[in-house]
Length: 403
Image 1 (cartoon, helix red, strand yellow):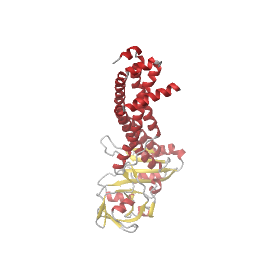
Image 2 (cartoon, one colour; image 1 turned 180 degrees about the vertical axis):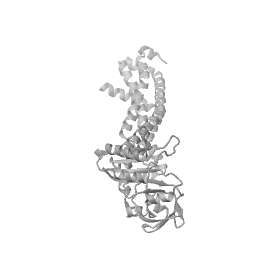
Image 3 (tube, one colour; image 1 turned 135 degrees about the horizontal axis):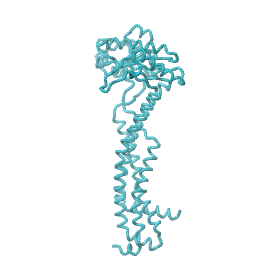
Image 4 (cartoon, one colour; image 1 turned 90 degrees about the vertical axis):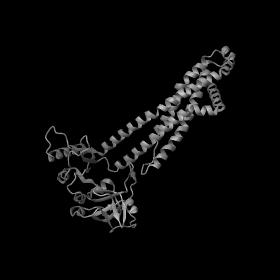
């Protein structure tokens, strides 16, 4: 232990004597670790935001949507008849279609215009999406059956249009259509850079009527299953019902997709994991460059301190002592670079997330911190072993003669 402590003191003293060189030596490690932490914090923050939103649906939810071909064109169609047939399946407690309306550029109120997402839904959608009104009420079955032109708006829509704090009973205009505001939703924040408070919900039949028959709407059915343990069997029944309703023959591919909330979350996790490793691998190259820099500088340092090594050996220092001293010096330089890079990566990730509108806050998981510090220490060991071994092999007599 005394030998280790003395080697550590010698290494720290050598680093302190050449502060600028030590900083430049660790610069590659600083840049590499900072880049990795910044990338990981942004990707993990995005994944956490998406996950928290989808978890609101619960593991007993299914998402049914039309398939697209290789050119992005819709292959199948989800109709009102599909909706009616699915409602009759035992075990489905709630179902709501969802379709985005893109007929006009935005909504207006007393001369003010604002771009918002107009979405057609049914009453059950509120509970499944956790979209609860802060003021007024949500869409009802009567609203849908009567194709009423009513709207439930997000708080951002209200604020951007300059509407009263309580806009219930006011009218907003969507193209030539006037929509009566019947509710204002609670604030939900952002997901994937999308402002969830910037929505206008209208009855699904009203949305279909606004779009007419000039275009095929993109429809998603959100389904709530009573018993999560039956979700696989109900998924199979949903598939059979839609195939039969769409006239698909045995061997024909489905013209629709069915995913559970857990499957969606799993897919999101896989995508973000791939992104993390790809970007981490790219910026990790700078760690390799930093390691080579450490090795080069340490080789120069060994040459400059040849006489010092000779004196130490003449006083009784063993090869193991010299090896330990120079190896610790390389590891400490690398570890300091890792710590500085860690703090810098935190700051860069938070700064970039703050500059991108509606982007979720960055988040650095514990595994990324330990990985960054462990990897930087490993770089110091791998690239410090050669200079340390060179110093340990020096002959004491030749070292004392070195000028």
